Image: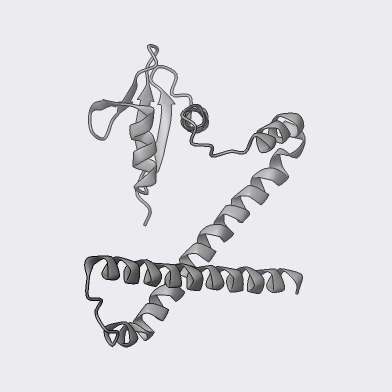
Length: 167
């Protein structure tokens, strides 16, 4: 059963108040709550108007201002250019695309864990390196191998997904 969204009230002075903690909160703290898996609902303290979308947009824009480059410039131009004319289609496409991305990431992680479990014995049979630099080089090589395997898994998942979409 999903939990209730955390209620955040925005006052006329633009301060944000987290009702669940009885404390003022910043945009960055709201972003942290969301990254932790919480849902938030932001409302105007006086009128009770829902301000969630505009607040989340502010968080994204603040990230852009801090050079986090979440959105490519060309995407932002297209969003402004076509705006409302493609709103419904765009929202559906973006939502389903993001869900597909998350699912493929989870599937890749699952397959990587399965691969690691299946090859656990092989790693323990390797000869331990003699010096610290040998150990470091060995660990780097192992990480590189895992990255290559993960890339291969992601390519296979993408290929399988594309085949499913064509069918």
